[in-house]
Amino acid sequence: MDSNGIFTKLLVITVLLPLFSITAGTDLPDICPEIVPRSRWGAMDPLEIDYTIIPLQYIIVHHTVTPTCKTEASCSDMLTSIQNFHMNTLDFHDIGYNFMVGGDGKIYEGAGWHKVGAHTYKFNTKSIGLAFIGNFSNALPEDISLKAAKDFIECGIRLGELDEKVKLLGAKQVSSTLSPGLKLFRELKKWKHWSENK
Ligand SMILES: *[C@@H]1O[C@H](CO)[C@@H](O)[C@H](O)[C@H]1NC(C)=O
Image (tube, rainbow, N blue to C red; front, side, top):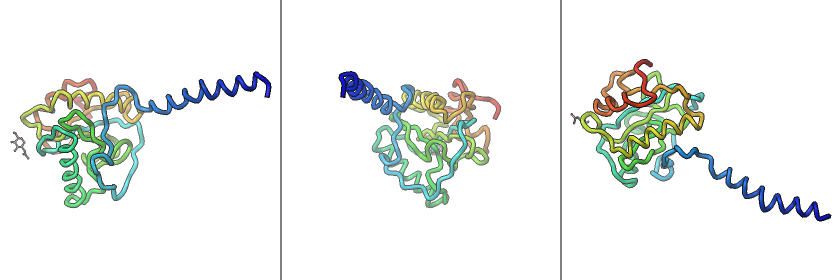
């Protein structure tokens, strides 16, 4: 091999290969909040998975109407009991929400991206169902939780999961429920993507 050949080989090994591994490692946009994967909170496997067509046009916000949680351990326990209730009592295939927001400011993966959840009649195939863990009729979620949810929406848009013109709705706008709670709903109405009409 001549010296040019050796130079090319060295260039590939020392310059280009590290570049590839750097780009492979940064697959999530900076805006994305920490998303705790199912495996980390101890989710049971879904009984069935149905996929949605992305980008989705809606994000629908709920509250779980449970106590709040402030640590990953207590949020994980809460999600385990919600998943049990959804699968064993309501006969859903999985925990019904696509993602949940903890009082610890983390987002928890439920059914996940581009999967059909079970949260809002007639909207499950065209939306992400995002549930704040707690009862927000009379109280607001923590500031870190509100920020995580806002960042999560921008993250979804950057990932191509949500449409740039995604409409943010409170569940009560499209079904007969009080969810996501009056206090939280009033807050959502100030958010960038909130829409008065579905
Ligand atoms: C949620 O909070 C409201 C207001 O504090 C209360 O009236 C309601 O009973 C709570 N719901 C549950 C299921 O605890």
